[in-house]
Structures are given as C-alpha cells and as structure tokens.
Length: 221
Image 1 (cartoon, rainbow, N blue to C red):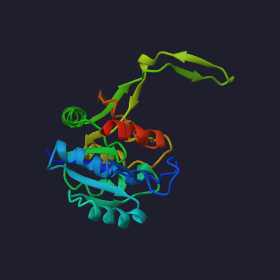
Image 2: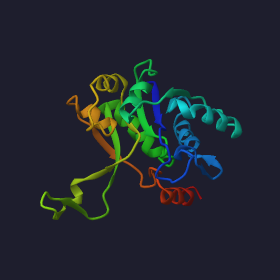
Image 3: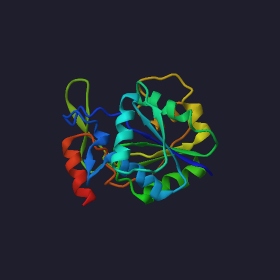
Image 4: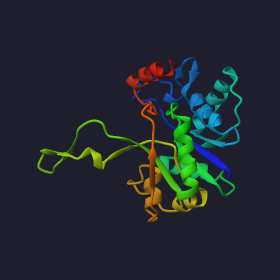
C-alpha cells in the first residue's frame, strides 16, 4: 500500500520572537524541517513526502537544501490560507489510493514506533491519531467565571502524524471549511466517521516557542 505524508510548514515564527520562520530554525546545526522529513524517510525510504510551504518561503527553503546538502526527495506545494486549505492543497498531489499521514513540520521528534503504529493501524481502521495522557490537573471554566476540576482520565492530548485512508481524507476535505476544523481528525469526524487512537510519544513536541526550542536542543543531545 502506497504511503504518503503531508508535512505542514506554514509557521511565521511570531511566537519565537524572531524573523526566521520556526520550521527553519537550527537544531544541532540543521533546520527543524529537515529533521522532520528525515524521521519519515527513516521509517519508510519509499514514503512519498509532500511538503506544504508558503510560496514566499519556497526559495529560502531551496537555498537551505543546497547549503545543507539535503537531497531527500520531496514535492513542494503551496500552503493555503489556513491549515485546512494547506492540507487540501497537499491532497491534490496524492495521486493513488493508499494511506496519507498529515504531520506538523515542527514536530521532529516523533518516534519510529509511533509512525509505524499510526500507518499500520490506519490500514485496518482508516483513521488513526496518536495521543498522550494528560498528566496535569485540568479545570473547566464555567460561565459564571468560576471553574471546576474535571477527570483528566477522560481526556487525551493529540499529536501528529494523523493517518487516514487516502480516499476517506480526500472526501472529508471536500466539505466546506468551518472554524471547528482544528485538525484532520475533526474534518474526518464531520463526515460521521470514527477516529481511532494510538499511543504517541512524549518527546513528540510541537516547537513553537523559545522554551520549546531549548527543549528540542536538550532532546536531540
């Protein structure tokens, strides 16, 4: 079965406080985005990588690939106005049936076990996302301004890659965009299709702040 991964890299680096988009920041001498792509090639050397990147950043990315001698094959696709539209643009390049993963470009530490689990289970269940347990106390805000503790065992934190049967994901993205579509699972669920869970890995953090970048440097050491 053909495996694809759409890697979304549309960040502008605002929360990092710098001018360089976060996906291009260096960790161990190499842009985050390269570490992310390498993780999927390490899992499957034949995986088809589709990199969804704002058109304004594509020349810069091409220059980075030359500087770092990065030659892993990938197709670069224009990003959209929102995450939803970026995924939809990437899906236009999924030309066969198979499995499609959607992954955040700034999650370079997804484990091989998690990637394999997502694709393997999606081959059976058609829609799979990795999650981790909530380890801190969670409170629910009430309309009167107070709050209450909720049972954290009833909640999970969602990661990527979120992996789906290609035809199912394409059909889901034919729906009109609504703001409640915060990830691919929410788009698929809007069709009335169940989404199944598999265990993620705690190191699979989304790097969006300077603190996250320090964590990334610690993890990669």
